Figure: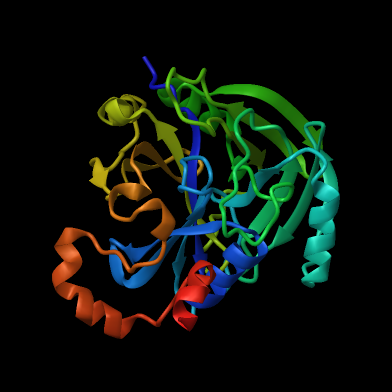
Length: 329
């Protein structure tokens, strides 16, 4: 039996300048920097987590700022767009905001939804669409955006797939997703997969789609600035081992369950070549910082604490705009 994923958990991209990455995602997009830590597999690189007020699963985008990284090369088997929900009626104001900040954007329709597309300064492809997430409004007390403009969680992630049926069958058979729509346009054929029914007690925002766009060439992309490194799907905390077993049964080679401090996860590569992850909700970002100090301190896992001074010396100084008043004092 498949493990029923609850939807999107987070996406992870590649940036270049650490502080510039923070400034854009906090000041312009209004996301909260909920954690400053390091890439556990490359500790001399930062790992930033941006999201809703408490970093709720389903709201989070994370980044590895690789200074000096060349531009990404788009290809098959990668994530090529991240769409966020905005509250109904908010797209017009968002277009004005993007234009005021000199960000080129385009508007089109997909699956009956109006979509505004643009890029962050590193080239990460972003989209906004109006949708009611079905839960309380997401924003935080010191946010630079009013509630009406605040991003309301991840809506969809687009993967390029040379053989979309294989990827779709894997997501259906192992993770309980289902194809709910198909679209054929000048941009190509697109399949939309939705998560299975949400389990009782799951905290909003649940859901989020995976879109598969068929591409004619299997030529893979190349990671660089603006790449989306991987996409994570939510699974219940108690089912991470079952999710790994389901991926093994589907003929994949998932990693062992990894402890990422704020969640536990398993990575795998789907048939089209994209790196995916399944991740738990818990224990969450409040495990080592109180709600009013999320993202304030530089956090390290226990096994890296002995390297704190060394890493501090190697990494550039960064800070969240949320705490600017504390610096001034």
